[in-house]
Length: 190
Length: 190
Image (tube, rainbow over all chains, first blue to last red; front, side):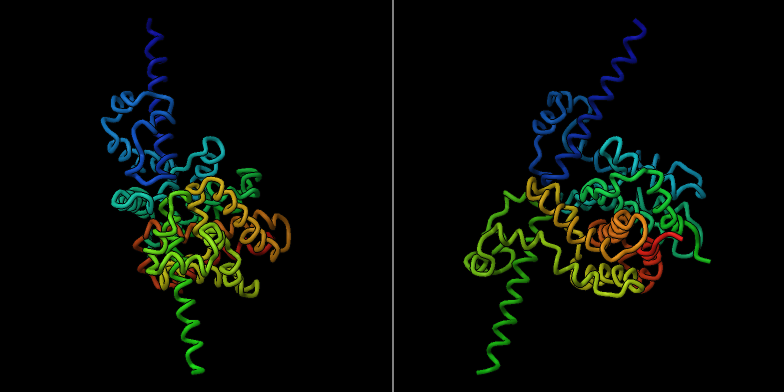
């Protein structure tokens, strides 16, 4: 049964993804300490022991949700001259296709007390500073934070405020309108 | 004692402001239904009856926190040709001087269930559509949402992610860098 393994792996990946998605959903609505393993399991449609099997414990699961590394690998996966359009498209397609966003979960930091500080520290090193390392010229750190601000705002408008205009617009049309602002932060001022 | 009245009025205004600030703080960290009048009063340093005196009841207080009208009066108080710079400066100075933001509380909509839908509806009509009404040309509604996205993102970076670069930078230097992106949404494409 050589075909069984890929199917099992797909199921495992789907379960892991459902668990992470459930944890993200709850972390956007409840303080860290108020979320039980049972609530995550119920929402993900799995058993609590399966969460322990995949993630070890609740804090390890939360740590994985609070890590931006894998998402930012995808977000930054373009040459610098295409990076502005790529990042804007990445936010919009994640939001429209999966209701997910590579970086937007930083907005829920105030819910999580000391864990919020971990989330902020991860965000700084794994998102802003990682982008800054790609940039040359003066004020690269500030320009990286402003480029990331642009992406965060688009995510808030699309996924949280649910702006009807941006949700109805063609993704490439929004990329055309919005990416120049990101690109302007990626290159040094003349 | 003609001087007593202004002093009393100042105290009342300070108390009202403290109550609204406390309610905003708690609404950024807890679900709407979990917040008690007592918790708001304790945080504001006032008595629960004083909240009732000023706002009538808890829901009326929350309704006033969820209203953007007064903040947007200030945010939009500039002629169109200065509006981009004015709005960016408004977000940055509110954040740096008072730890407040005219529109950022929309990010906490997911915490509030059905109240979150009220917050979103207010945001659409009182923020995005009000800005759109100032704009001419094609796609004014979309361009307004994108301009608002830019302001939201800056507020998230400054007030929630607490980006060290943007917080350390001179406000006018950030206005110089960021406002052109807002201005580009305020005028029709050539």
